[in-house]
Length: 183
Image (cartoon, rainbow, N blue to C red; front, side, top):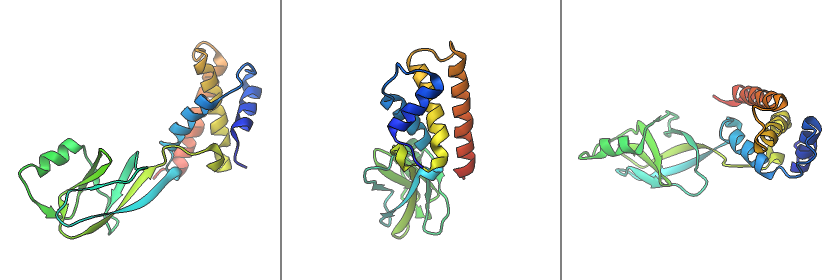
């Protein structure tokens, strides 16, 4: 069963004996952000269409954290910087099968420009979700992450052994989720 913020707070208070902390919104947001950006089960796949001979297409909102782009045949493009795309494109009008991509200023750039209209699959992580949207096997990672963040927020990380223990356990659980989900 997925956890609510209040149940995560209650579990974290029980584990840390930190009943002086009555809100974990900031701590939970930090942990959720880290999980959403490191575990691929929280990714989505969308399609964008690029016109023939063009190097870029605007991405709609929500395309933060793009980590893979494939052409219509499922071939992965190499990620490069916008500076590299600009250098390749400078003084050249090459078209062909796109081999590399960059994301900059809410746009997808490819090189070379496709010869014909091309559909690309864009894989990106959600920026944030609610803890209740995560499968139950994320619960321990969420709770331990909040536990260590509770200590960190009070400046006690490294000064209190329990803080270090919670941080290490969180990192171990997060690594396990990454191993389970990431390609």
